[in-house]
Structure formats: C-alpha cells, structure tokens
Image (cartoon, rainbow, N blue to C red):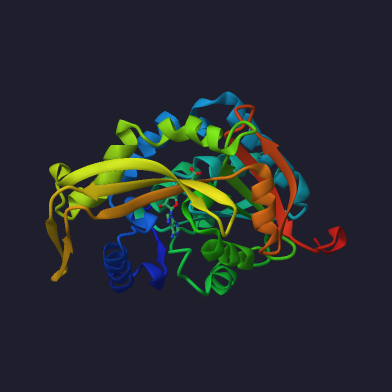
Length: 334
Ligand SMILES: C[S@@+](CC[C@H](N)C(=O)[O-])C[C@H]1O[C@@H](n2cnc3c(N)ncnc32)[C@H](O)[C@@H]1O
C-alpha cells in the first residue's frame, strides 16, 4: 500500500473558515460541537469514551438492532455497485459493518467516509480498508452544517451511477434539527436510502427517561473530553465548574442534555491575536445532546420531506435505527 493517500478537503474546513467558526463559538458562548473532534487528542478521547459508554460498542442487542437496519437497507438495493456515504463517520465502525454485509451479498462497494475531523476520516478509512479496496475509498473532510454544495460535490467526484446508502449515525443529537435536516434531505436522492440513528429516551416518561441517561454524559471520560477544548485555549480547571442540565427546545418539542462551563473567576484567552474575555459568573455552553423518541424522529424528519419506512429499537429503548426515504417517492421510482 502507498504511504500517501488522497483526502479531499472541502472549503468549509479550510483554516479561514475554521477560525471564523471558532471565534463565533467563543463570542456567542456557544461552542460548535465540531470543535470537540478537532485534534488528534480529542479524537482519541472521544473514541475511548465511545468505547466505554456507547451501547453500540457494549450492548449485543443494540448491535443486533443496527444489523437489522443494515440488512434491510442492503436488501432494498438491487444495483451491483453500492456507494456508502458515511456522514459524520467517526471511527467508521458502523459503516464498515454495513459495507461487510454488502460485500458478502456480492456487491461492488465504494465508501466515502465524511467528517469534519481529518483524524476521524483517516480512522474510518483504515477501519473500512478491511473490506473496501483502497481504490474505492474517497475520504472527505467537510463541515456538513455549512457546506452548501455537497450534493454536487458528491455527484461530481464519485460514482454517481452507483446506488447510494447514506448513513447518519449518532449525529442528530448534536445538531439543531432545523440547521442540519434541510442539508441532509438535499443529500438523499429519490432512488437512495438513508440509514439514520438516534439516541432515544427510554420509558414512557420523557423527563424521567432523560434523568436516567444523564450519567452517560456526566462522567469523568466525557468531562475530560469536553474540557480539552477549553484547556487547549488556555482556560484552567480552576477557572470554574463544568455542569450538566436538561433543557427544553419548545420549537421542536424536544429536550436536550446540555453541558456548560461556569466561570468562577475571570479569564482572558487569545485566538490568533483576538482577545476574548470571560467574566466570573458567565457560562459557555460546551455541548448539547438532544434525546428523541421514535415518534419525535418520525415527526421531525417528515417536516423536511424524509419518511421513515422502517425502524428498529434496541431493547434498552436507548437507541433506534431508522430506514428513511424521500417522502412521496413511489416504490417503482426507486
Ligand atoms: C457522535 S459522533 C458519531 C460518529 C459515528 N457516526 C458513530 O455513530 O459512531 C459525531 C461525529 O460527527 C462529526 N462532526 C461533528 N460536527 C460535524 C460537522 N459539522 N460536519 C461533519 N461532521 C461533524 C464528529 O467529528 C464525529 O466524528
């Protein structure tokens, strides 16, 4: 294998754009979650906490739930060539399981691991190379929230005549639905399918269920991962406290778990010559994670022309996988 590989970098992740987004996050006191996956250290920390807490890594039933979704998507595709586009691919473990299944079914497989983090894209590529030939792998670094031309980018550079399965696993919790879902909908062609997963609230009582899952966030590995962003900018642990709470999003009839750092003393930081002052008593929001119910997934996707055709919910009720199509596309057109 060559020691050099091609990774495409979309302009949305060029240094000037990343600097703009970072300053915006700091000025608004609301951190864009993409900054928690930026460095190699953050990538390693996230992969470790994912390994420790994600049901997809530790719960056989949750893994089986994903397998059912993979099988259903693979069964629907009749074409010989199948292109899997992993949006926010992370370490690429789930996409690779889907690719394995497609390969076993005799398909020629192509893979685009797509993520805001170069380290994640490279990790996902390496994971997928166990099943996908190197020549069929097209890593892409891109900010899904700000790139406006992704449908054209994907059409122009890769295999537009292959059938596509787009994956969007574990992504929806960290985005405002109204920002990301129009973009996601524009990436699903009428003949394609989308595999989508969401962290759910277990049980019938939405608030009680949220309280039950709070320890999955408020733990030492997650705290260390979230703090790395501030520490790298020169904030110190002693400058304040990291806290977690449950917040309402009435517009979307959803609730989310929010992590914020509350400054107990003033701190000045500098980013490329720009000074930003945090005063004692201020809070910077570091992270949020929406928790859905299956009904809320269906409702919110429908608002953007996406229809859930099938769903698989883990026995823990904490995670669901959804097979999604563009609404109003008849079976013959697929
Ligand atoms: C919670 S992880 C999910 C990873 C993977 N899909 C999985 O299920 O294991 C979120 C991923 O989204 C990526 N991400 C965050 N913001 C993004 C953005 N604006 N555009 C593209 N990727 C983004 C992160 O780098 C990270 O790999």
